[in-house]
Amino acid sequence: MVMTHARTTMWAGAAAAALVLTAGCGTDTRIGDSAPTAAASECGGLDPALQWYGDNRAVLDRLIAERGDCSGGGDAAAGAPLALFDWDNTVVKNDIGSATAYWMLAHDKILQPAGADWANTSRFLTPAAAGALSAACGTETAPGQALPTSTDIDCADEIVAVLDEKTRSGQAAFDGYDHRRTKAAYAWAVQLMAGHSEAEVTAFAEAARAENLAAPEGADQTVGSTEVDGYVRYYPQIADLVKTLRTNGFDVRIISASAEPVVRVWARELGLAPDRVMGVRPVVADGVLTGHLVGCGGVPDGDDSVIPYIDGKRCQVNEVVFGVHGPAAFDPLPAERRQVFAAGDSVTDVTFLADATGGRLVINRNNAELMCNAYDNGDGRWLVNPMFLDPKDRADAPYPCSTTAFTAADGAKAPVHRPDGTVIADQVDAVF
Image (tube, rainbow, N blue to C red):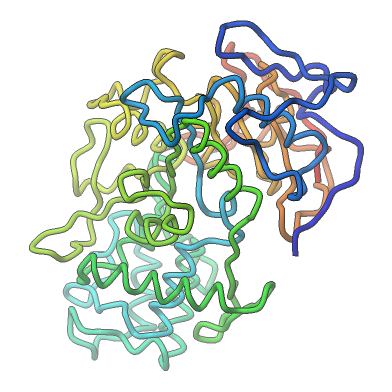
């Protein structure tokens, strides 16, 4: 079911007249309440039958018409405008990394770690979590052999709990990592694929995809004894946006914090080739995933401290798309070398969204740091849309932008700052 929104148009953080999208010729186009509906590109605009919030479709049509051409899917290396999308809860409803992990647990595809010691699965796993996993999953299964998680409820439940960053007893599952460069639980979901070939992981993702698309909308599933999301749906509006961008000459790519082999499976539906998909990259040796991850920005492979998460997303885009290596990959490129458009839904996306020079689409999931930036809308290029399926209710209180909405590298909470160093005031949720 596609949700419709008939509320009065609300631009992120300002009246509609404040929205500015930079035209390809270097002039500014202002689209306000009294402006006529933007004409779509001559090579095709967004489907008018698909419902967007307020005037969002018209704004996107104008950006596409101004910055694209009719050459078909382009290549950023040859000067085509770049459009970047997060995947989970941006292109689809729900999380495909979680869906794949749940499928693996339900089908006994997670292997006993080396030495039956769960500390070997992540250097950021706390002793409490490693001990809880060992107690729940036991040592009877030999290292490298499949754990019977389809029937061993305790083991499955503990793994699901740790994937959610706490043990079943409520202790922190991960610590000691840079919170602006990785999320250890997301990395661990990929590290749990260790011991399988990439072809096997692809098959797991295909099977999980089939199950989650076939499940009724809104369905849950039980893994161990834990109730978790049991379905995934592509957002028709985003699929149409990807198609329209490609038709208009944009180089469209995915930058996700799910496993790259998994995202490639799901991206086929949108016509995106494997080399247009970026995600968490497992280190492969002798055809088998090792449980370590490819580094970025001068961080070596196997260090496992950087994935495409917040600043790590910028790093991977700069490295893979623009060929910038070493620590400089963590820095913003000059505006003329950055993405024109970006779309995301959570804090993991805030850096690569801010780097976009033309337009930034935010799917509102009430993530405080992201929504602080979107509603503040300092340069007029942020656009907010409720989730297209089962949208979130309005946030009960203003986002605490001026105090605790920002997560620092050490995990501490702090105010959200603008690029000029000033603090963003608390923001009221207005698009829901």
